[in-house]
Image 1 (cartoon, helix red, strand yellow):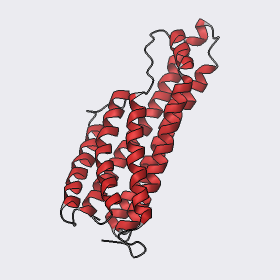
Image 2 (cartoon, helix red, strand yellow):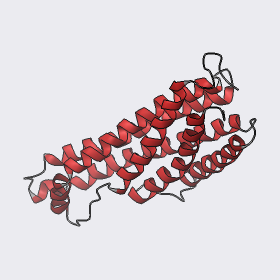
Image 3 (cartoon, one colour):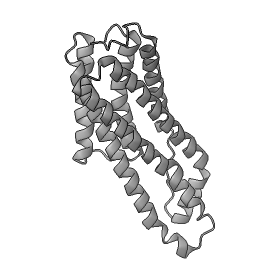
Length: 225
């Protein structure tokens, strides 16, 4: 079903699809190059984080950019499907909430934590002994925001897919894929099967990316929607 403001050949929809595809693939590439801390002692961890701070900033800054670009592109997708439908409105709202949560989580991991550790580059052993408490606090904040982001984005995928279900052909197939991914990702987080460390978050980006790329394909073709 097409919103009256858009034609089947609307170039905005096609460009939005291209942005979703490029953002999804680049985000996956960035996640595969996400820096990890392997040092054991706090002094060594501080030094390692500082050494990788530039890469860390690039990775998380890029991820934030692509989250926002994808959000904007899915806004066009929602308008195309018709925001008069409750399923589309709910999906758009939840994806917005999830995107903001993901941006906040990336800010903590990519900028707040490295900047905080920068002040401990010449810290004494007594000062370093206090770091685990602050590290645990920031990690908890990052995980809470990350879980919120994954769950709400997955719910958004689920509701967009419910809306797509009323169509035929390849669109219905994409709807089935979205329902499975949406329910699967959100359930895995809620029951604690999936931990949002670097490996876990990469899995989420891959799974949600499958649906993103399928939707991008439909948007680029546009006549399929």
